[in-house]
Length: 400
Image (tube, rainbow, N blue to C red; front, side, top):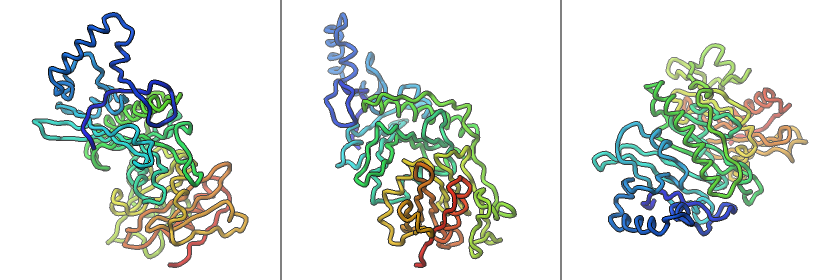
């Protein structure tokens, strides 16, 4: 990642996402105003006096917004609770829209103390279509977890005490080669998934800061990309409470992840040796219902997801050809509508439900060292389809 501080540059014209000629915000602030020539001389003298002042945020008169001009000082200060020098290092914004860079660009915000980096927050803009024919687990593992809750307010996105993401509207995303429309997303990452677990108050406060910052990041990216829409600030007081984990026994064992009649296979039931818990994402909506199961909920034991947001479902639909084991519908009339596969430890079935596609996903197989995802998927699809009103869905997973 190349060094450099965000300049807050924006396109001269409102054009689709892509490389374009840009002029700096500082130039536009001065253009056509009294004293512009004098101000230009002053800025030139300050720059000549030393670039380090700009890097240290000491240069007056110029905006300090970071990460492609999208995050304000208030946004950044909310992400770093301790004092110190904040440095920004960003890749060009155009990387997010060029195939040579896989449709992704990043901005790193780092807090330094005594010239030593103490904390880092990473902002990213990514087209989820860039995961075509790649790892089905990579982005969902980090950003579709039971720790997260929906942002609400009409925004497709989620937030936890360490992660946040927002999907840009369709007008800012393009179809991939297969015709599946996956969203472009902006995200923020701060520390490990379980960061701030030991302090619930700090977790709630930081989650609110992440929620505000990721929406502002999304708005800045949309503005820079020539998109007309913007999102309102999230109501952080209305965010659902952080999800609790529950021991998987008794009635919970008979209704895995709150799905009536769904249970682990007999060979993988909890025991004195293997005590399991489950955690269902709080405030689950029609966009994403996420549940983690296992001894260690943040280490990929078993995750069950129902993605009713069609653009999120297409993250999996675009990869259905890479699995060597097909998942097929029992009813012949669904063969032209539905499709599924087992790829490694991810079993997925994408079905037509109403006017859109829904993805049913079983991911991870380390519960009791069993290969559970392929075995659990048929029952999960059947019970979840019934629960959400998709009618009768039955699938077959061949033995392998």
